[in-house]
Length: 138
Figure 1 (cartoon, helix red, strand yellow):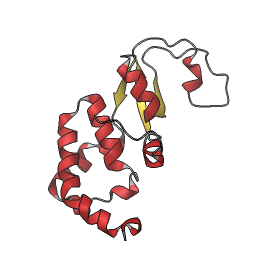
Figure 2 (cartoon, rainbow, N blue to C red; figure 1 turned 45 degrees about the horizontal axis):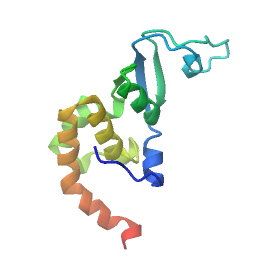
Figure 3 (cartoon, rainbow, N blue to C red; figure 1 turned 90 degrees about the horizontal axis):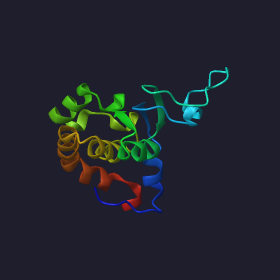
């Protein structure tokens, strides 16, 4: 996947998308990732624990084979089918402002070639039309 512009604020905001990860091993000192429940948090993250983290952190952990990444609900099978059928009727802005950017990054990271193909095919006919409607391009 091509490198993003380090200073691009949209890239930074897109990588803040929350994703669920599942650990393969105990993570020493990783207890801070557990959600705050008011009770004392354990110091370590246990093997098999599922926690929510931003994409940028999940990406680093997946590349080190420390965790497994679950695709967010916004990329479920029903949405993928709608994108294949008629991308214009799919209200992706309600799901995430950076739906395509995050989706392609997640698909690349998880080697989900089907999702990659669906997102690219859905974006190609609609992307230029949306770009023309953008006030910044006027």
